[in-house]
Length: 332
Ligand SMILES: NC(=O)c1ccc[n+]([C@@H]2O[C@H](COP(=O)([O-])OP(=O)(O)OC[C@H]3O[C@@H](n4cnc5c(N)ncnc54)[C@H](O)[C@@H]3O)[C@@H](O)[C@H]2O)c1
Image 1 (tube, rainbow, N blue to C red):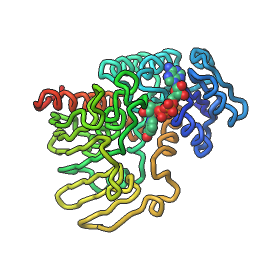
Image 2 (image 1 turned 120 degrees about the horizontal axis):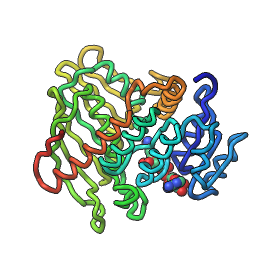
Image 3 (image 1 turned 180 degrees about the vertical axis):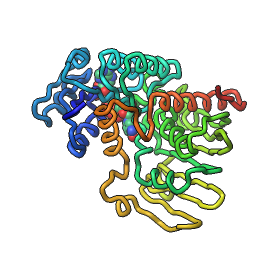
Image 4 (image 1 turned 90 degrees about the horizontal axis):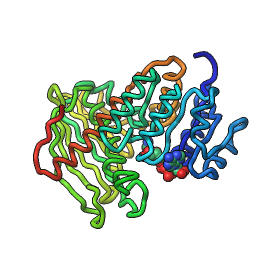
């Protein structure tokens, strides 16, 4: 496909606004349609982009031949129907994480995308952080990993904490952590998960909100993880990773904006100094990669495919099953 990639943003809240704004930082992409169940949210974003329109009727986007691809930035329970409808309309699809709340819904999306022959990318922005890429380059075959994603306590009435619309913080942000551990592990499929934890910070809800766990990846990398909302530590920050390969150690902290390396080629890196042209949060590189996928009708090079989205949701549910049953959960 030559020329400009024309996007529709579906879901015009925080992330819809962020991605639309980042279109100004990526060559050759323009949002031309904004859809939201609350039309006012769509109108607010459309006001910032010439020759775009706002609608509360998402089907208008599917019918619009000028739309090449959609960014789905709605609440989690709506991802499957929207992603399937977009694919069936022949649009390439970017879906914010998690791909869907259940493995069955993720697989429904995977099947629809394969049938339609369109590209789908999941919003696993952490893969696109410059220091994550640097760690992946320096330690491609790790033996041991630690991944910690600990946030301040989420509000009880926040939609993402609702088991039906959001699935709770461990599903919502845990997919980032589990996808990243898989990515840092070097691509071996997960073999088993063992986890403990429970409903610790939101006693009146049914969602598991804090989890300690271990994952064994083939062919032999082991990861420890901590996910929850029991408090955001100032020393490690919300995102904290350690990667050991037997010779080198990489420690990522300050939301992965800083890295410390021990062993050969040791030292400290700050994302803003080492990679001044890149977004330390990964969002801009992520959007640029999606635009290239659409332009060339190819899967994302760094991954974050529908299959990756399904794996991350499967790993969270395996951890929940292990917490509830107290057993090691083996993966297919
Ligand atoms: N990658 C990240 O780091 C990151 C960070 C925060 C949120 N997210 C993800 O982004 C997505 C959106 O989160 P948010 O914080 O922007 O939420 P939000 O509540 O700010 O915005 C969501 C918008 O979607 C609209 N909406 C909901 N259901 C809809 C439907 N069926 N059709 C049309 N519009 C609908 C709502 O009216 C709302 O305006 C979620 O998947 C969330 O997990 C990702």
